[in-house]
Amino acid sequence: MSRASTPTPSRPSWRGPQGRGPLGRGTMRAQFTLVIFMLAFLPNVVLTITAQPSVPASTLTIWMLVVGFLCALVGYVLSGTLLRAVSRLQTEVEHGDFAQPHPDDPSEILALRGAFTGLLSRLGTEQARRNAFMATLVHDLKTPLIATGHLTHALTTLPLPDEERRAVGQQIQAETTRLLSLVQQMADAHRFEQEDVQVHTVPTDLRALIDQVAARLDAQTAPHLTLHVDGHGHADVDPGLLDRAVTNLTVNALRYAARTVTLSVTPQGIQVTDDGPGLSGPLDELAQPFNSQPTTIAGKQYTAGTAGLGLFIVRRIAEAHGGNLHYDRAHSGRAAHTHQPAAPPDPDLPANARPTDLTRFTLALPEVTP
Image (cartoon, rainbow, N blue to C red; front, side, top):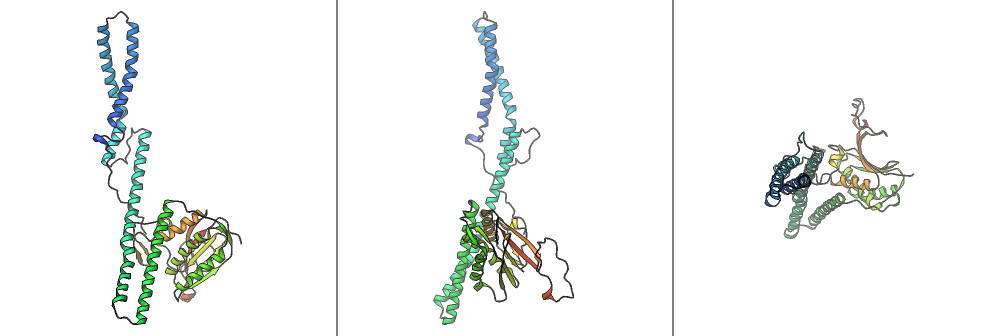
């Protein structure tokens, strides 16, 4: 999957009242001018009066006016020089082109450029996610609603036999379940993205937990699939949240597996392994909420917005427990992890005896005891 592109957000207007930016360019220059004027003018006043006490007042007044004008002129010129980098940055920000620094930029201006660039990057990311969220609402929610509407229309207006009526009712129930699951995924992803996941840990039998997940999903398992459970271990976890994470991984595995899905308790945590095609890109790219790009898995394209919700939720739950989510590919029958390309299969072996690439997710936990 290609990295989600970050759209360029509309350039905000940085001008304040009367065409002045938030830095108050005119006000700052006036303040700098006044400070420089006072620093230059006051010593001249003191020195002139003390050094020439007999000079007529009119002459002193004229002299002070001349000195004051020169000090103000020097202050105005120097303030413009001091604020040149700020004024230039403001002009560039107003035109939306401020990423390229200048050789004479002081460190403070460089820091401001970095802050503005980071702000626009975050705004672009949020805009991309908002667009993906809207795509989800328009497509992923509308599709099951339309299907439910058609089924309901058929159920209420057509003279269907009892068997077909029950079949239509089951389809409506399936679409409703899918819709509720999607809404729950979106709500959880938004909540986990905005705030920390709250966990309440208790000593938990991990084998009993994955047994419950397997028993609950067994009814949804296709006839050609086999769901295995293996291993034993205990850990201090939040059973409800961990059940949710393992369920997400298992549902994904059952969706893409060819023949076998295995839930295992290991010293590292809980592993979900299947013989499906695996991820189409790096886990860090796919496990993001509301991706703005569609995802292709096993030749099937999934719309923007929901492709990474499940993996994102699992990763956030793992991180809340002090662990993480890992993904790798391995050969069946091998315990060691491998990220290397698979060796060519032996042509003399029958197809069902050749090693199979397995997709393996490890929900790592800090401490798992036998």
